[in-house]
Image 1: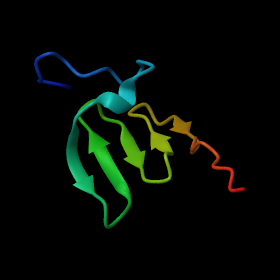
Image 2: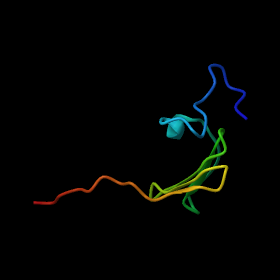
Image 3: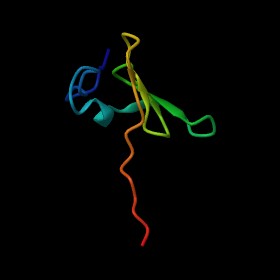
Length: 63
């Protein structure tokens, strides 16, 4: 799907979130990456094959 040079990581790559945003909708809380991944602001993801990756934010400890 990606036409960038060098090519962006595929949706199956461990670093798939590094792909370039082709449609950003911050007001709705999501972005479409050039590899077909929908990335949500809560860090959840929807992969092109329909798999869901649950939000995976790092917990912040407040002292």
